[in-house]
Length: 199
Image 1 (cartoon, one colour):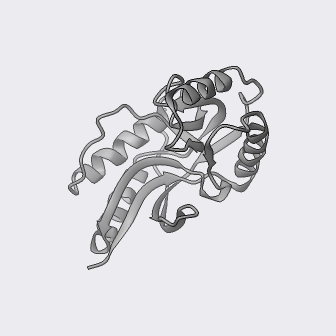
Image 2: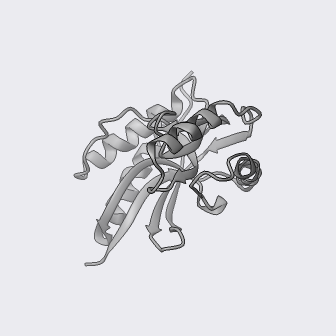
Image 3: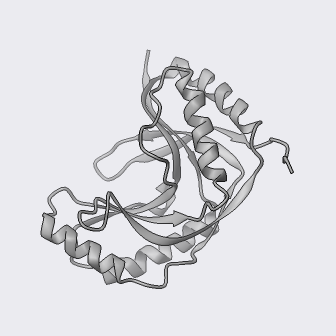
């Protein structure tokens, strides 16, 4: 049976992707000289859960689980902005833009997705969920001093606090195909959030 490399995500709309692409262009100028591999704008997404290599026979069960999750959550929107780094600014591997989740609705949605696929056999997440949109990754050959200097440079940057709004209306089951020039992402299923608002 064939396998697909799968993940569950929220896909940004076109206008937000354009804003992120503009931010990337500004950052590429400000961070020129640092060994960064920039995300292709069409490949930027907010990952709720990475599933990894998965037997294609399990896709229907995953979609059913996501449909049940979506029935428990109403659609919402989140402000996007602010730069961050994983694991931290002293030794960054990933440069990202954050989402403001003050009501913890995105965190609750991610936890529900995590619990639903755990019932299908996936391991629960050990690290706390941190919703983000990856703009770039630091290349593996970067040394510790170079990473530290990059982190300091990113911390000094301003003007990226408000980049747009992320509508969280639909959960996407995505396939990732790895290629030397970057991953190719294909949407396999989309499930709309249909839960009733509980006031």
